[in-house]
Length: 303
Image (cartoon, rainbow, N blue to C red; front, side):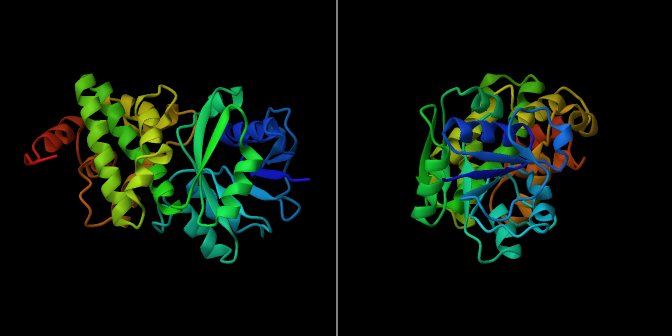
């Protein structure tokens, strides 16, 4: 019988395990310290090897290499985290390939808040992989009546969309926190989408992927949803909170903080004014007021 392993027992890992069980797939959840996780799910502290049809990696990107180096997965892996490795500029599937070059991989990405997935509220997402058979397998293991999954053959675009939208969400939160108004936030999200598209295309993905769930859909949710950690971090920064205090108050990892400089390095030469301003602000090189002034002072041009 088909089965899954989910690595990472944070909110997203637990939600994915619940969803897989809801879809009828026997699932085991891995945690570094099972005793510290309050859950009724099947849980283990032993890293899985074989015996599963796929392994979902719900581990923050900055910790992904460490976990992957500790075991030899025998089943395809599905990246369920969003970001770029700060030390190397690698996308998650590139990290997998560098450690396990013969391993098949896919990406799960879309506008999904963990609490809503766990509760069984309606949602949709994308499974991106070059291999159509792998896409079909992952969809069969996770899809249910309330969780609609679409296949996509552009894993590069899906990974970059998930990474870049977190940086833009910090900017959207800053706009709201600084009291700049809904007009400004709408304009920023729209121009952020254009920026995201340029980034994805420059790095080998497709513009059509950006127009879908792993691009536009995820961007809209993360830039407007109160449960978005990246948006809330930006909101606090816009209200005058220091970055250290904003991160300390976050219930989980604020992926956009590490992603911003890594994305700029990876996409060097691409016009990314919003991401550039966010990275400079996070590094303490710009104040909120100065960052807004820099963006508004850009030369006028056709859209």
